[in-house]
Length: 176
Image 1 (cartoon, one colour):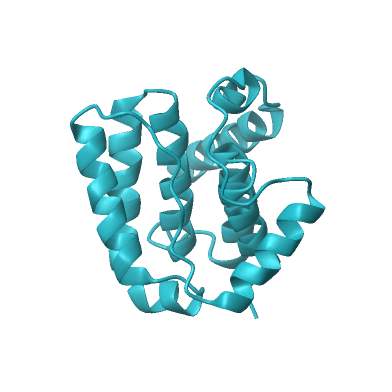
Image 2 (cartoon, rainbow, N blue to C red):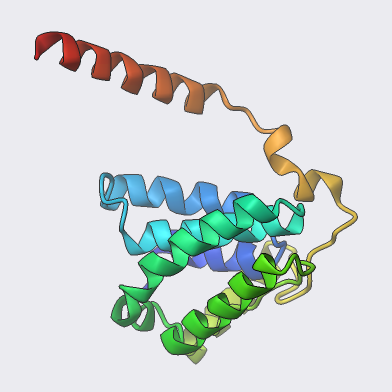
């Protein structure tokens, strides 16, 4: 009914609050299903999670930029958000309020996506427990590995992909 990657996204978003992992999971899914569409619903959800990551780290500029872009995309996909079991109107309203909070330099608080589908919520609760997470706990702001996860990740694949894309661009420009 729902993509497994989306369910994993929800489990991490509400369970261990690993927004970095949320990004990784949906980015891979997006690349396999809607790759070059920068206005994809999946990109909107990725940017929303990335904004949570930045806000939690007190990177207000990054949080503002990513949430603004993500919100713009999600506003264009309200019907698809509903099909993903979310209350789209409430999500959009909540994200606008969070963006206002970020603009004012307000402190991060954990956000709970408004899941409308009780079956989806039940599936997520069950899987969350199986993963050893507590559903809807707030972020552990003292967990430095979680809060600053980007500093410890292996970036070799990202660097390789960027270099390959740069090389393709150079070759294309030479051929023009």
